[in-house]
Image (cartoon, rainbow, N blue to C red):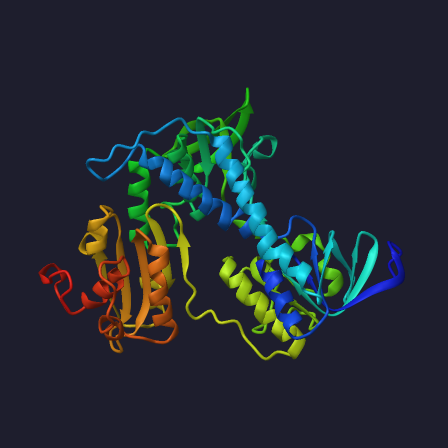
Length: 475
């Protein structure tokens, strides 16, 4: 027996959930509904990444930046919006107030009102296959669910460890807007912060190793978003290698090799946005006989069960999608399986995702190359947003929607969009893919006019018709 802590009065629960974010709370709520006694263990701030340093605060600040940007770029003639000096500290303050409010209503109030759920603050660590310790107190449970999330992955660049760089956490706590911001990375986190700070007034430079930004999207999406960001005076340098990072007089310098030549970029602040890694190295999983893969993600079976049959895992720490919606879904499934046996599998058939730049990017289903690799005989169409009446009415015709179908069955395989409200209109096609609907099912559905959602009907119709020859509401 480990002598690190007392074995007297070992506290017992039906289920212990380690991690107090969306996946953890979904698991705990499911177990509580099944009338089981549950403990949620959280070492940091309750609410997880999404609420505290991810989805919610970034979308709040992106919206603030969009509104502020209207003072400089307004598409409507006859309306003059004067852009007053920005109070950046106040913008951050209102963001913090929002997070505090949501943390209380969406997390704290829930566990305080649920007699089956006990919240325990502290760092959990396994001491054997069925026991954990927290602050020198031992706890046991019949079943466990691990939902400890992920953290920023830091690029291996010489000198970076000696520089006061920022991640997605620290950049949203700044009280002063940087005049210049250098961003290492070109994924969805990088582009959202790039546009946000550029619109607030920073001079932004993005440094990206690969040949395109948001490289996991369709190539047309990457190209369109890059043009939009370039038009907003964001400098984007691609296909480079990083040589070094250093800091002098509170300025950060990044030296890269591009086309065989050295270039150095200077910023008041440096944001590292190079992906996420799991927090699986924080709680001695090996003592619980839990296996992880080469990247540190916890291995689970189709029921989200780990190599220890009494322990399940869900959310970012298993690395399936790293989306809060998927995390919550997995948490609920894991909670049900842990209590009732392995009766349910998570549903990944149609998982949408979005990038909340302006215009937004949204995608669901297969990309064109992936559909071909899977053996489908495909057709695809791309509809420019200027063909959508609502886009013209609001004077925002940037972007397009691309639909990929199986040529034989006409079933929708994938939809990829960049444009106004793309993240909202994607749900129609998410439902279509989930239920194997065809372009005829979409074309024969009456849509509200004028809406951005009509883009989905119009692109479905474009497989049969020349959309330039139709009137506004023609079938």
